[in-house]
Length: 295
Image (cartoon, rainbow, N blue to C red; front, side, top):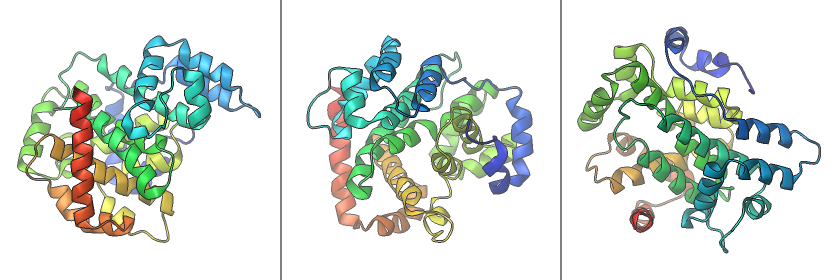
């Protein structure tokens, strides 16, 4: 763990964080799996052993298969298909593989719950993660792993809230149909919100500090992108590509209205230097890739 659960969240949302901490005593927060803990330990070495790390991932056959499927997707942009975890680690680097493993392990941990998940919960984060990974490379010149991690972790709190509050899935569907402010409505009804819970999960799983910041504030994108003095360029680029990816996913599902995107579109595209026309073309391309991936 890199920081206490409340180190940033208490500063950002002081009124509700105490209530969130109380509610968490009645929520099931998944623990980081053994493979991730082993990876973190191995990566602390002065000269990490790629073979040892690849073997650690390979021992979890389910995660290993998911990692290979993920890195071989067109969204990661590898020129040649990789056939082993060792080869993937050599190509992408230890940190990148560690972040991909974390995102995939979270999905597997949350899928085991018996409660009805929110709409498109398993499909949408995967879509957003893949799209954000590609956009991070295209517009930020950055490795894809942190953008991928963001896509999978940002709404983890939704499933945990569904486990705690039986009416939450129906409540969330109603919110999205009516285009209401999700965080504000969650605060009003449950005295906490999914972004805070996602932040706490990401802290307990040891995600990088700047990734946790974005998870906590992913519904405050406009303010985040304008904080020239307080936020460096890499986190702002990650926030921008995340919001683009979320909108593309909404288009993929046929949502005719996307109030949040309409509010932040100009700021987001201007930050990355992307025209509206170019973004339309990008959206079409990404949607086509998602459709092809279903085949």
